Figure 1 (cartoon, rainbow, N blue to C red):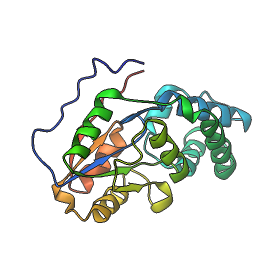
Figure 2 (cartoon, one colour; figure 1 turned 45 degrees about the horizontal axis):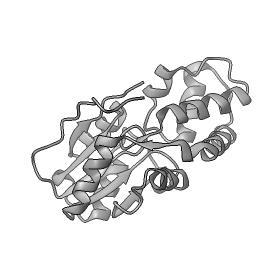
Figure 3 (cartoon, helix red, strand yellow; figure 1 turned 90 degrees about the vertical axis):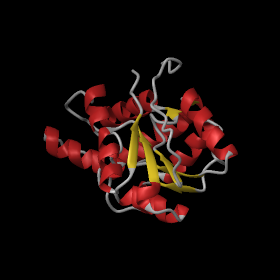
Figure 4 (cartoon, helix red, strand yellow; figure 1 turned 135 degrees about the vertical axis):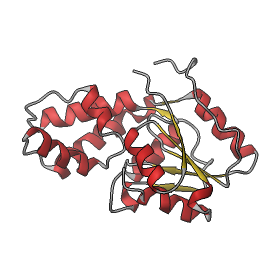
Length: 202
């Protein structure tokens, strides 16, 4: 995928806190996650095609919650823990293939040079989020990393964004969130934060 001509409306306003989703926002990892999900669901006998459209409609939702939603939506009986385990294992084997979304990575680095307070708020598991940040060489840029392991409710609930703001020590209303998913944007708005939608490229 090419992000060279990606149009991102970077804010001119200065914020006290900057919060970034990881996959599809700063890391070009969405195709890899989709392949991992397809592998795991096929392995466990899913009787429907886990299409790109279905995948992106659930972007930002925690892994086990994703499987639960799939079970309801498509009358499946998939084991959330088992499917999640195999999905995460497949992704972990391929995580070194992930590359940064260049304009976003450059923006993060420029903010880091200015001493901005930044956090990651990702619906993925902590171990994989940290490995992804390492793969794109941004692991040291963020003061806080909040993942599905740190919350009880998935996006679009605002919990993950509010926790990120708390860890940064910043009023939620003085934060901006960068997200590629509409569920994430909804959660950030529910937290009272400004938002920037990162266009999806596929």
